[in-house]
Each structure stands twice: as structure tokens, then as C-alpha cells.
View 1 (tube, helix red, strand yellow):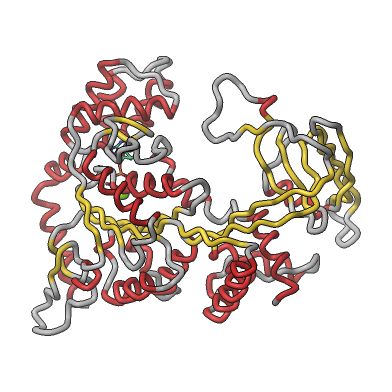
View 2 (cartoon, rainbow, N blue to C red):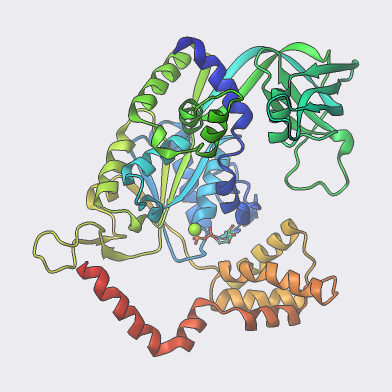
Length: 485
Ligand SMILES: Nc1ncnc2c1ncn2[C@@H]1O[C@H](COP(=O)(O)OP(=O)(O)O)[C@@H](O)[C@H]1O
Ligand SMILES: [Mg+2]
């Protein structure tokens, strides 16, 4: 184990952006949330860090943050209870932002655990490990600078005769002190493609592993309107070739995956192996145990530091008894992330208890569908519906973040929609309305666009009312076979 591990950690850092991209998309609608927006006294500011209103809940989350910082939150969980679109996910994200830069945030939905291929507890375990970060500090020999030249050189493929392969790649790196041209192995070119590096990016290449890491875009390329996704960095100082303290953030899940993946060469078997890459059955308990051991050793040696992140389980009432039992145990474990649960249900049946006891088929009814022993560990925070002014301000915030122009009446109209259905619904209307106004050749979203979007799409209440009785009948039809099967 010992010899391979330092390389796996580095290799993972280069590829760690890829696996979580679909989860990033899930939190894109919350990109305006940068924290909880609390003052120094712990009281919520009316509007700060992207957060508007919901003050009591934000202050409560702030208190939980203090508990976390004082290490008094171990074994507990935060439960956010409130209607849809009242900012539960936003609050969880705010908490993770407040915990610090690059603290993992792993959102999941309760129903994700139901898969025919993977055990429920396995899915939970995987998400637990996604939410635990490891920060590794190493001093490494690197080449760092802004890319000024990137030229791959092609040759005939010696193996197949068809197509070309990359023979080598020439990269020129610039720092404040000077420029250096490097001729590198084709494998480095692959990681360059993976990191989507282009001219003008600041990167570093590790001298002995060839791992490539994109630091950011050189600030010489910064425009007036900076793109939200870009991080601009200054031109590195010093020589191109130097020793540098490299800080890598990986999650335990990244390490599991990197060590489970077959690492092949250039032959045909490795091509086939790559097709089924990410096969879930490969991460075994034994492998996790081994990784935990190595990680513990790193921590003891002071090379690495554990960064517990936030595991957010939305619609927690969808979990069943087996999962709740697992959760209880996992919360007790020494390496556990901070767990935030969310639900929009009041009293409901705990899943997986339906057929026990009396045989009445109703099962055990509990608050939020959570067993009492887990509820006991939860600090419960309620989120309340928004006022019209608050909805209006969030809409304004989102239009700014998405770079949309909108007229005042249109904002008023959207706020009305938000009051009538939910904040989420009002925000969802924004993007289609933007498309409609662009199609019509307008530069701003107007009230007509909102009206048109509103006639095309329906909020839940309206659609339910329209379908009326027929839907109720359908629901009954569906419910019966599910209960008897
Ligand atoms: N207090 C708030 N301030 C700013 N934006 C908010 C606030 N509450 C909710 N939002 C935004 O409204 C949308 C819906 O909220 P969300 O957190 O998904 O609700 P929930 O998880 O309770 O269903 C998201 O885009 C979220 O970022
Ligand atoms: Mg949510």
C-alpha cells in the first residue's frame, strides 16, 4: 500500500473535478447564496450574502455553526422542516459555505437510496464519504505558470495504422520572471484535455507524476464583467520550475474511486476496462478500510487534515427504517460529516414499518416520518413562507446573477406568482421567460413574457385544480397495487 498511495492521492486531485459535475448542476440555482448573511452579533442581516428574510432560521443555523466550531455537534443532526421553496436547500448550502473554502457539500435526495443494483446503506455510505474531505499538503517539484503555447505534435499510430496519436506536446509557461518551454509526454496531454486547459490559464504540472492542475485564469484575461464561473489569479512569481507547497482537496469517495478503478496501459483490455469505469461494485468495504488506515496514518504524520463537510439529505421522509438505523450509527462514528436533513412533511408513516405490529397496513406514524430515536438527535429548525417583498428581492437577486434584464412590472408580476404558488415556481419562470423575450427580439423580460410563460406552464395548485377529480381517482388506482404488492 505504502508505495502506491502518494501517487493515488495526486492522481485523484487531477481528476477530482469530473465525478461530481452532475451534483454541481443540482446546486446551480443556488449560486447566489454565499453564506448565511449573519452579522458579528449572530443576528441575521435583512439581506446579505444572497440571503433574504427567513431570519429566525438563519440565526438558528448560525448557532448550529457555532456548535460545529466548538466541536459540540458530534452525533447530532440538523433537521430543516418547512414547505417547498422556503429555502431549506439554500440554508444547508449557506452552512457549508460558512464552514470554509473548499469544504465538501454533498446533496442527495432520500429516494436516491432505492436502486435495484446497490444496497441502500451502500448508497448512504458513498454519500457520507463524498462529504468528508481530506486536505493534503505536500511540497512538490512543479512547473507553474501561465500557458502561452500549447502545441500537440501528431504522428501515425504505430498500433492500428488508422488515425493519429499524440507524439508529444509542447507547452510554454510564463511567470513574472521568465518563460520556459517544456516538451511533455502524451499522457500529460490527456490530463490537459481533461482539465480543459487553454492558452491564458495558469496551471502547474507536477514534475514526477505529470499530474496537471488548473489554478485559474490569468488575470491579464479578466474582462470588466467577470464570468461567474471563472477564478482569476495573478501571474505566478519566481521561476517556472520550483518547489511549491501543493494543497490538494479530495474527498474520501474520490480516493475510493481512484483506488478501485483499473489502471491500465495502452492495450485493448484497458480500453474495455475504461468503458465500465465507475462501476460501483468495485468499491468494497475492505478497500474503504484500507483507505481509512492510510488516511489515518497521513493525519498522524501531519501530512493531511480531515475536513468534515456537509451531507445534505433532502426529503428525508423517503428513507426507510434500515436507512435510519444506519444513519444513527454513522452519526456516532468518529469520522462523520455534518448531517443536515430536510423534509416538507408533518406527520407521516415511517417507511419500512408498514407491515409490522397490528397488520393494519398503516405502519408507525411519526413526526416527519423519522423514528423517534433519530429525531432525538436532531435540532429542528422551521422555515416559514416568504413575504411578497422578500420574494421580490430574491427575484431581483437571481436576475442579476443570471445576467437577465427585466422590467419592473415583470418583477411585480413574478412576485405575485411567487405569493400565489411558491418562490421556487417564480424563479423557475425566469429562464423560459428570458428565452421567450429573446425570441421576440426584446432586450428585457417584459410582463407579456411572464404572462406567456405562465400560460404555457402551470404551478402545482392550478394544474391540480384543472385535473380535479380525475386525478384523485387515478391516485387511488395507483395507491392500491403499491400497498398490496
Ligand atoms: N431566503 C432566501 N434568500 C435568497 N434566496 C432564496 C431564499 N430562500 C430560497 N431561495 C432560493 O429559492 C429557490 C428555492 O429554494 P430551495 O432552497 O430550493 O427551497 P426548498 O429546499 O425549501 O424547497 C432556490 O433557488 C433558493 O436559492
Ligand atoms: Mg430543496
